[in-house]
Structures are given as structure tokens and as C-alpha cells.
Amino acid sequence: MIKLKNISLQIPIFTNETRHLKKKIIKSVTGGLLSRGSADVTLIDALIDINCKIDKGERIALIGHNGAGKSSFLKLVSKIYEPTKGSIDSDVKVFPMIRKGFLTNPALSGFVAAKAQYLIINKTGNGFGEFLEKVIEFSGIGDFIYLPINTYSEGMASRLLFTLLTSFKHECLALDEGFGAGDNDFYNKAEKRLDEFINSAGTLIFASHSDKLLERYCERGLVFAKGRIIFDGDLKDALNFYYGK
Image (tube, rainbow, N blue to C red; front, side, top):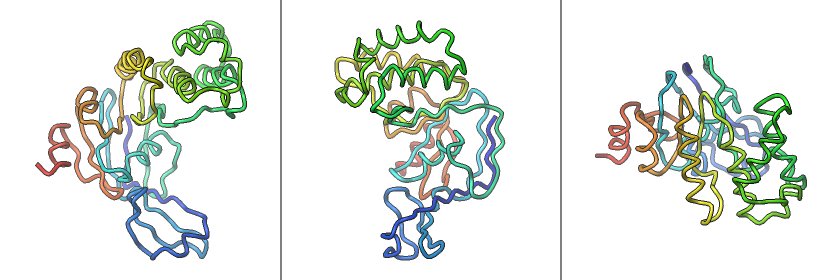
């Protein structure tokens, strides 16, 4: 379903500060190597020589330290990033559940954010009224849906975002566990919904630091280090490899 062949991904960084970095050092934030491009550009080698095949229905765990390449891989298969080298063959749309913000400006209302999400997924406004009622009910934000998002508490904004992102089924889901599910009172309801949401996806690519979550949803593991896949196999074997067992 998704085939990555000889993939490399370089991300250009345009800041004055990068000129003071050594030519090649380990980047703790991204895990890739830094290399000098032109005079004003530093390149991060976020992914290096990736070869991988993901079949329909597989549930794959991405394992590795912060900056090992997991998030870059999710963005690559979701087509947020295009590879610098290599090729990707895919016959499925991968939905990226990795963003931590709304599609619209927070100065606009929750109503506008809900409508933007609905239109992107459905390509039509038909049925939006019923959808909005369900969003208001589940998120519990009531009439605040018509107020600007930047007037919400952090918990309210998280509840609305979580509700919008988990409102639709997807054939293939790229999921980063760090998107958050709101406040404590909302957690149990959110956990049940997330479980149903993940299990409804035909194919799952899941980046997480929680072995418990990975074991709950995945069967295969890809271990990342410094932008490379260093192990690909059964999840239990992948976790043992990662922990050096």
C-alpha cells in the first residue's frame, strides 16, 4: 500500500544562528545530522536511506528517542513533507493526526474551526449541522463554540480539538500520541473515543513512547535512530532491540 525506496529527507533551516554551529553535529531536537548548505542555510538530515513497505491493514509502531526521525516519517508518509531523494509509491490517503493546533486562526470561532475540519474531510457542507451538534455535545463547550478560540481555557480548546480530530474514520492513520485529550474530567470519555477511533482505522502508523499503548494497538515495530530505521520486525522483538535485551 505504501512503499518507500531509498528515501532521504533534508530540512533547510534559515537562521543567522546556524552559521555558528559546527559543520556536522548531532542535533538533539531532530536526531539528524546538521550539514552546511549555502552560506545562509543549514540542512538537517532528518531521514536517511529509508526503505520500507507498509501493507494494507498493518498496525505499525514507530519507536525511538525524541528526534530519532519518527515525526519526520509520519509527515513524509502523510505528504506534509516531500522526500529530498528516493521515491514513495502509495495508493492510500494517509490522515495525519499529528498537529496540535486548529486549522484556522485562533481569533476565529470554534464554529469556524469545526466547519473548516468538516469541509476538508467531506468536501461539502451537507450534514454539517448534525455534525456540529455532536461536536458541541461531546466536547462539552456549549455556546462557547461561537466565541473566538483564543478566549477558551486550555482545557476547552484541547477538548474541542480532540473532538474534531477524532470525528471521522480514516483508511490509514498517522498518529502521534502527544496531541492531548483535554482535562481530567474529560479523560475517561476521551480514552474510550480514542480507542474506537484507532480501531476503526484500516491501517495505523503510530509514534509513541508508551510501550503499553504500542502493545495495545500495534503488531510490527520500526526502530529509529539518527534518522535511520535500524530495526524492522515483530513489535516484541523491536522493543527488545530498542532496550538492548
